[in-house]
Length: 385
Image (tube, rainbow, N blue to C red; front, side, top):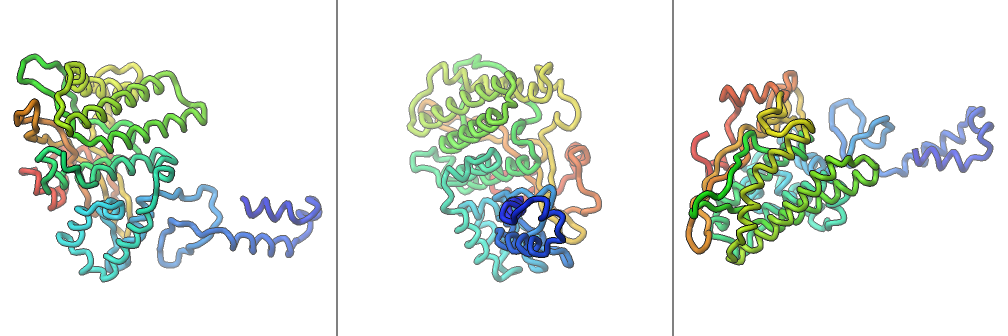
């Protein structure tokens, strides 16, 4: 539209231009179009043109799509992997798995070089780039989960199994992001209660940078809603609660890394988060709903699926199944304490493009126990299915 406007304003009287067959006008317009930057996201199908095109609804640029596009090559590597995204965003563990477990370079000789170029393209991006919208900011928050942990981190966070768990969590959340479920990434069930005995404690994963970046994503969302004047009182209340919760988690994480005992109020806040998340998530579905068990349909389950790439008659599905239980020994008040929580169950697999999975179909597969197996590298921190 910019090219049309420029040529339109540079070619004299409006009536003469539109009534004239206008070869000069068309030549000027064609020359102006050729100066436009070509799209950064483009499909490569035999017989289908690429490059600069006019589309009523153009394809939106997304960093992860850009990364995946850079790392496919027909026929050597027709599909990307979710690991590509986090490898290009700097995850050393993702790069190790791609090179040593899947040995991608053996199928496509240029893979490692292409990955290095993709990583270089995003290495210099600062927070201004990542906070320009909620989608980018969500990726930025997940990137923090795969950065080296500080030396002060508890022993359990120093292991390769924990690195793999964090990478699995990132991929699970990214699958929900691709599914456009950024705001209701919640577990299927939530527990409620309070510290009824002296041995009951709460513990949050000490990842202060993750909580800080996620707080930035929430603020970016709030600014966008304000810009278009679409923020309701209910949404504003939920966003304020989420920001306060992330600030609390950030503060608690800093204290846990420093070995500082939590206050009674901080313990109480941690105990109440599951209950509060349940309530907020339910109200986002329907303002009249209080408890998650009242939610009906596919939104009731955390299991979701999305296809992110296509090649001939196959598509690449990214999704999460039911949540897994995670047990971790953590230091609380100078003692090792066995804690229990939940973690994503990430899935990635090829599927016939003629029968793309919907959430309803996928959730039935989850209930029937017929989902494809989890990635082989997740065995470092999982037992059974």
